[in-house]
Length: 292
Image 1 (cartoon, helix red, strand yellow):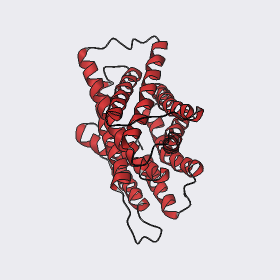
Image 2 (spheres, helix red, strand yellow; image 1 turned 30 degrees about the vertical axis):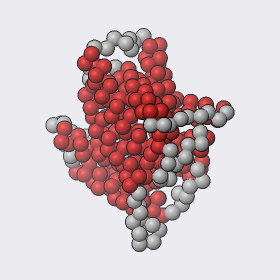
Image 3 (cartoon, helix red, strand yellow; image 1 turned 45 degrees about the vertical axis):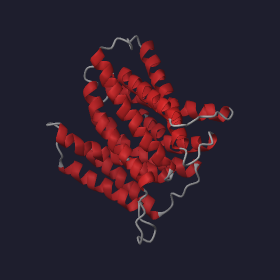
Image 4 (cartoon, helix red, strand yellow; image 1 turned 30 degrees about the horizontal axis):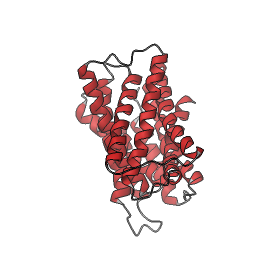
């Protein structure tokens, strides 16, 4: 139940972000405004995680110069650069399509791990899973009559690029986590990355105007979902085998698509979306199958 709840929270980010654009009155072409919006979210999320770690009795400030440099690099790549592409991409595509396209991150991670780690090579299950997953991404870009292939570079392309950057940065983060508490590491990288986004957005002419309690609520929710989901996921991984938890990742594109259909009134009843979800979810499950 805990793993499913985490994936539900992560999936809800797609409609929440797009609703946030409307509530904050951020225009589609206001890229700097989107970056400021993302920056606020991750600064708050990072601080929440650091407070959570402090309440557990962990020291969040005893960092060596090397550790801080590593966290800064991770924050710039995994949070700042990745979410610049993600937030811009999501503005130019639908929540349903974006949640499916972003699932490519799982398959990028599998492919990158093959070339980086000696003990994480491609297997038949992983190859089949990757093929099915990328096939699902291809399907969702065709129209209902299979006569036209529609792929927006600023929309779909940026979401896929964000997924690739996240996969590469996560492998670097995995190495750092061997020498540092995972909660502290994520808290700092979110806060640093969020600060870079906020400063960069304001420097580019962006602003963020609050419009009543709805603005505070949507920003607070987005920050909480990042911090709560990560804290709970880390706790689950601590007390359970990775093989038991990782397959639940298939729920992220499902919940993202369903919640986008509910809250954004987007269509999910087309056969291509159903087929794409089945292929992507089965692919994610397949790459996480562990042979006994």
